[in-house]
Amino acid sequence: MKLKKDFYTRTDVVQVAQDLLGKYLYTNHDGLLTGGMIVETEAYSGTNDKACHAHMNRRTRRTEIMYHEGGVAYVYLVYGMYNLFNIITNVEGSADAVLVRAIEPTEGIEEMLLRRNMVTPKPNLTAGPGVMSIALGIDRSHYGAPLTGDTIWIEDKGIALSAEGIAVGPRIGIDYAGEDALLPWRFWLKGNKWVSRKK
Image (cartoon, rainbow, N blue to C red; front, side):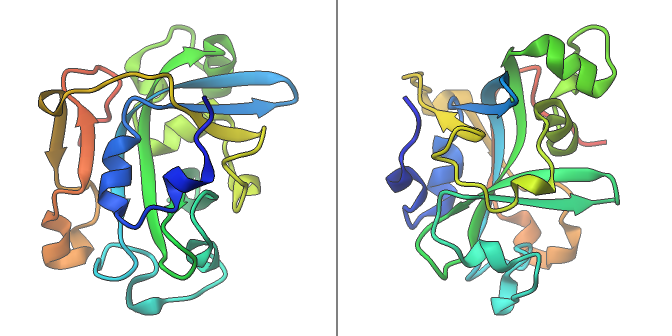
């Protein structure tokens, strides 16, 4: 079942980030369906998080979509080469987002391999937010795309995860955020080989 708007408009972005584990992220490009189970996420809060792009009510061309009502995509470029896929949450004006860091691929794996110029589906196919976006064909043309449409969306397949199966820790690559870099706002499935790794 495709997630509805009310899943994304909840006010606790940290809870939403955790609840996204075990859900399935899909993209459809000209009839080519690719996707898989979300196994790693990070939460970012617009009101009290120095790591968030919208911290201190920062509004730029890039961050403007963060102030939209939850349920749309926020895609931005890093290192001049990677597009990172985020899910805007909460009500209009709150600027909360969840970064999807990794999926376990289940659909359209051959197409993902082609996009990644790989031969066999090793974990680095989709383990990490930049390579995941390449595999799924996500780029900045998806900026602002509704997650309730038919191009990019998330489904609930009824997978129940136990609290014991979810790992919690600090987010990756945000040392600039000072003490906020230590917030335990990264979630991943314990023992899942598709989870990204620190370099």
